[in-house]
Amino acid sequence: MSVRVFLKSRIFLKQLLYAVFVIVALLWFSLKFLDLYTMHGRTITVPDFEGVHFEDAEQIIKRLNLRYVINDSIFDPAREKGTIASQDPRPNVQVKRNRTIYLTTVAKMPEMVSMPELTDLSLRQAISILESLQLSIGKLEYISDIAQNSVIRAKYNNGTIEPGTNIEKGTYIDLVLGRGSYLSQVPVPLVIGKPRIEARFIIQAASLNIGKEVFLDNERTNARVFRMVPDVLSRNHNLQMGSNVDIYYRSDKNFDFTEYLDEVLTVNLPYLIGRGPEDAKRVLERSFLTVGAEYFHNNVAKEKAVVYKQTPAPADNPKVLRETKVNLWYKSVDEVGLTNEIIISDEDFDDEDFDL
View 1 (cartoon, rainbow, N blue to C red):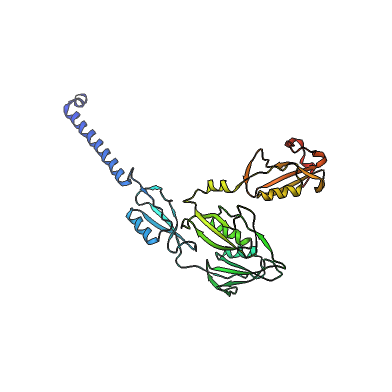
View 2 (cartoon, rainbow, N blue to C red):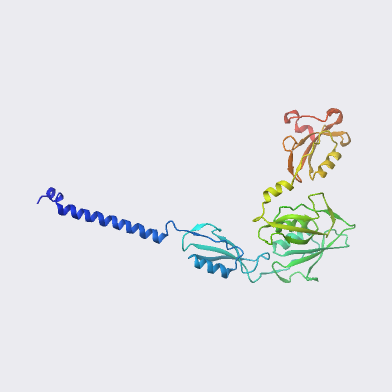
């Protein structure tokens, strides 16, 4: 039988059909096997383990057919010991079965550090050193001493703590400081919207103590300052060094700080054209703003100078953030004239004609 006749025979066509069927079946079973093996189209949503005790997180991970590795262990006095501090992948990420979740836990056993020598350092230096060692700032106590804001001694549990003493990270260290030759008042800094750690640092660096801390959402996670007492939003406050500032927090998980800050931290930009330097400064302070750079045309004396340009200008920025610096340009009142509406473009003057 010739090859041509064989290729046209029923036996060959039947065998060819069987072969095609077997190949298609093998391909189909192979693809199905790969789908099952790789769980194609089937994913697992990674839970949020932050704040969960490790033992509970371990059970959840095993139940979801995932794996875990403890990547690191950190000391954080603000978190409960033995809980999860962070994770990778992040919560709500879709992963396949057997994916490894890398966990960072909060250490159960605190690390020890050596108490540093702080005597005669400034308050800011002492705070920086304690923060670098992960020690917390406790109460600031001021006593009569000519060295203002200089550390007289460090205290722990109402007793003096000597340099070199081993102490747990996160321990609160009280500082006894000099009040100076007179009773000094300090401005209360604005920390609305700041994270808790940053807000505490700013207030303590301003020579003030943290008073009550109230968590309005009953949640410390992602806590940011919502309100302060005294209320620096209504007016500027000065307190004696060592006074208390109460802080009320809300969690940015439950509260929209973006809209809130835009509402409470912006002020109307005052129109300063025609005002003298001291008058302009008073107006800015009443508006919770500060004087930035000041330029005096032809070295004009302050008592004869009036503002003829300001940046930012009310026409460009009717509202600005509190504590924004406003730059002022002055000319002699004789040059400016009596009009309060002076429009000067950037091309109308040369910065070299002005003295800072």
